Image (cartoon, rainbow, N blue to C red; front, side, top):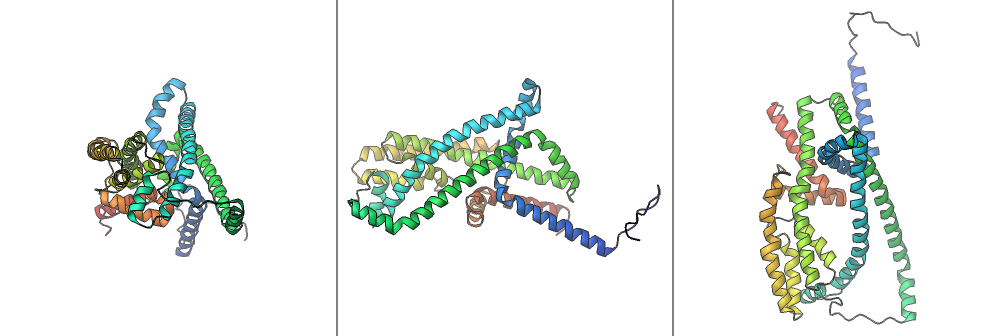
Length: 352
């Protein structure tokens, strides 16, 4: 009879569901998990960064909670400090980089030889003649490029909106991870069809990846980029902040690293008759910038040891960049690190 409820007496064995019911339940749950992942995917990188931040900032929040007499107040203060520390410099950096980067790209695309390209890096004009545009020519160029300019402006506006929304998700998620993170993690451990000891290992691998990328890779490259940027600025190299960002990116490449940037800059200074500045930059690059990697990285590795070979970290970053875009620099190593941990567990449990 429809709607009929079967009562089970205390001590009575639970009825065994049929295989078809079990299969249907598994398929349904699997579909719901995939649907949830699909819904959260656009903001998955921001959620991942928030979880990493919460894991690293949790000791600070625990200490601060004794002063504020509450975890939520400590989490709010920590999140607010991060917001103030990030938003101002981020806006200033983006505004300064956008124009300088566009100018540098424009100059490099107009060069016809490697010598001109090197000179363009260190010269405000790139030693390249710029055509003089009168009003009629400017109108013609605007008409010809108007559609492209509108498309570019629309893309920039869309990217800005996505960034603003992503930052909102990040800071909101960071606050709730700091306040309710342990309880959410306990619930996830209880309801995930993975043994507790395995879930703990996957969680540790997740936190290890975030800490390793921040301390072992990111902070070392940031120090190198800061020193190089100060040197570029002191020596009068134009677009020093753009070159500093490129130095940070180059620091992720093993062996060669930051030399991919400061060597062409020094060569450009020498080719433009600024031999003294070129010699100083070369000395700073060899004795300071490149040495930071050998001195600082082992020290930071004690706090951010990532159990992956440096070459594997690089390849996973490049692969992640190709698959996921800019976020792949973090997602790539995370996927590879979790895979390594999964293979270790499977080997220990003799599943393979």
